[in-house]
Amino acid sequence: MNPARYIMVGGFLGAGKTTALLQLAKRFRQQGQRVGLITNDQSVGLVDTAMLAAHNFPVQEITGGCFCCRFTSLTQAAEHLSHDQQPEIFLAEPVGSCTDLTATVSYPLRRMYGDAYEIAPYSVLIDPIRAERILGLAPGKTFSDKVIYIYLKQLEEAELLVINKLDTIDESRFHRLRNALQSRFPQGEVLGISARHGTHIDTWIDRLTAGSLGNSPAMAIDYDTYAEGEALLGWVNLSAELTQAGDFDGNRFLQLLIECIHQRLENAQAQIAHLKITLSPDTGIDLGVVNLVRGDAHPELSHELQEPLTAGELILNLRAEADPKLLETEVHQALRETAARFAIEATIHHSEAFRPGRPVPTHRLAQA
Image 1 (cartoon, one colour):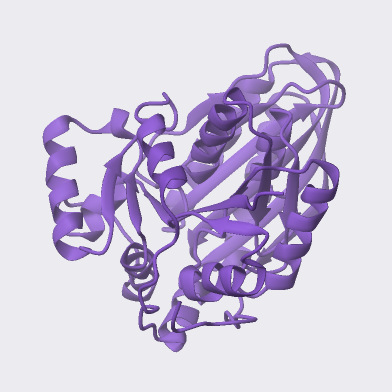
Image 2 (cartoon, rainbow, N blue to C red):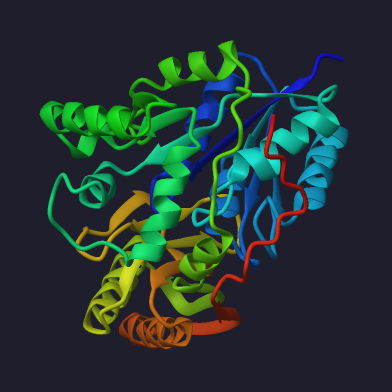
């Protein structure tokens, strides 16, 4: 059998990786290719996995650490997908606060499993508004220096710097950002897409399928600063069961819940990196998804439920620069308040608040 193509798409929290992977998966499937997806998080209960599975794609979820620290789990997930689905394309989404993935994932995968996988050029997705602020092209709230260190290191190792969300900026801002990225990170080719609208996805696919991962030496990275930057971020993963005596509007519930969380986090001065919530009925495959990618952004209902529901499962993933216990407290209170407005009983089955631990890669190859 020919080697499967392994495509990893990195990028900071809120860059739109899951929406982009879903676009790629749909395009590859339209071309008649079998696709398997691998999601990744520091803990269990991923919105991303629920979104991808709702579109009937085979998904494996790796939890408890990033790809670099769970390398064996990554290869086992690929083996499970190969056994069940025999994918010709693997699409992998690493944790949004991770970097150094070329040296710790792509190079080891090629070195040890080169007969099984053809490694595509490494893409890093970019939210243009966040990038403008971090690169000094526009004013606005951003993160502390050690979190920004991780962000810039992600850009430094990218072979394809993919500016997402073209629908949110005009052409002049795109060209200014593209020129800034090309000047500061000359190792990468800069592309522009809108994953939400499918704009220029085929151009990106051409780059992903025509070439292979390069052979440049791994970038230098200070793992102490990297670890300290990750430790500034708070993670909250929550799942809950919602029930009501009659039907309720799940889309409206999601909108009011995320608005309530948003306001409480703003009052607490927490810097939001990404907040994602899904709601799925207890029967069928319907799904509602709402996102917030910055504290000064507007929440977006990206997938709407088609019917009212009486019961369903809610999954919430919050990433922000703040104390995780504070984040969890605000989320719980917002859920209680919103549920009360709808006369809904909200039963929390799982809630976890933590800071990511120090990254300890299973392998790291300084040379390709």
